[in-house]
Image (cartoon, rainbow, N blue to C red; front, side):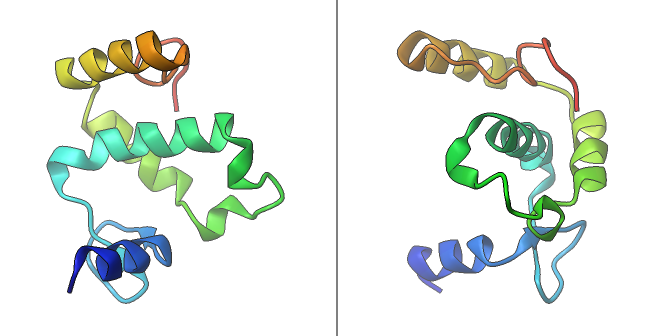
Length: 100
């Protein structure tokens, strides 16, 4: 499967606890990051379409679970600081101003 196909597959499925039909697998090292990025995107990006039923795209309970099991890393804080320096926006779930 080439990257383009893999990306389309991921876009058409939501993350799940394991690889199954209609669920995308996320390696453990990325689960906390994915949870915080998804939460940030849904709360700040108007391009995500607020009229969408987010439950069809993301399992909030699973993202909360991943956020709790895999806390913010120094690498995430470092990247968040750099993104803030360039874009002027930080991920509130990484900088600690908001929780899932």
